[in-house]
Image 1 (cartoon, one colour):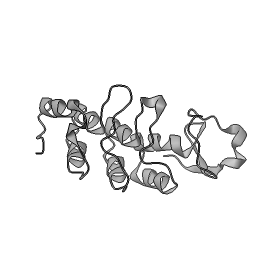
Image 2 (tube, rainbow, N blue to C red):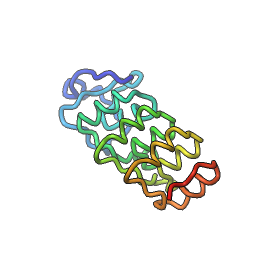
Image 3 (cartoon, rainbow, N blue to C red):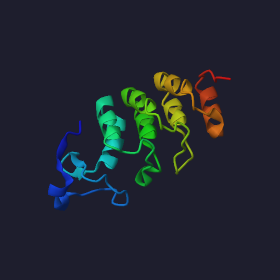
Image 4 (cartoon, rainbow, N blue to C red):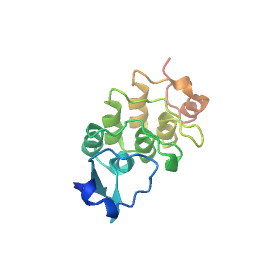
Length: 156
């Protein structure tokens, strides 16, 4: 879990961000990530990958962009992180956000969140993504190929 600490202004000199190119939210708390402090924008990837739905929801309510691409993680969005790590609880929380983009492709290999979940053979997450109203399987030809490979039914 990533408990909020003091306001960023009191920890400014202690901040050791791994993503200095992403502007932090103004007056947002920093989060303790194992002895170093990260911004809410960095914390969303941690929460999506291994945190709880409550952490993800709290960060989104604090103003973190649900579709923020992390250039240090091949352009992954929080949804990519949650699907790659098999964090179903975080996937559910992210899919409930009205501005979620389920069709985004990572910047390294052009993989979608659906591809990540399919590759992990995570039927529960694949089903969640397949039922999302804005999903476009055709956004990546790899989606259809992988769904066939792992024997998931492809919706028409």
